[in-house]
Length: 157
Image (cartoon, rainbow, N blue to C red; front, side):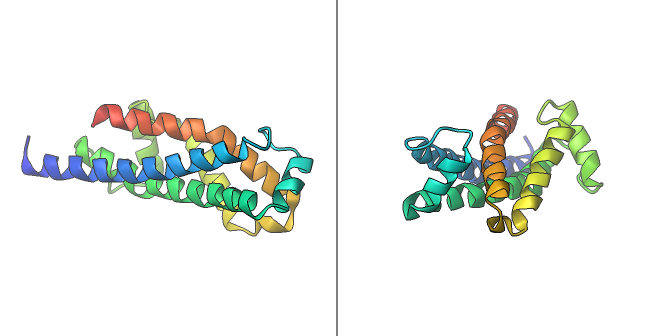
């Protein structure tokens, strides 16, 4: 293994570790909320959550960690993995996603769903309970997809 390959492998491992940290914190926060509420959340449960500072903090942590996880995977992990695999990363992101799909890392459409949710979070979701509930429920559904992505990357390193 050449020196560059070792450097690229170390970068993938570093980015994977960061992503796994975000996923663990996301899972832990859901685990705490699931002690009190059934998932997917319903409006009554969400209203109850708003009345508990602790539960609201877990909700905020879920949203924050999901955003950080999506950023970490999309901006760092994918490119470092392709560099480690000897691929060119100086190309449009859609081409990168298509290459990752060929490697059975992620489906392009699934990534766009994850990215769109991340973009929706960037807007002010706190003005609408329905939007906030939908976001938390979508993150709950998508976290297994993100876990599968990280597991697929781990198998290649």
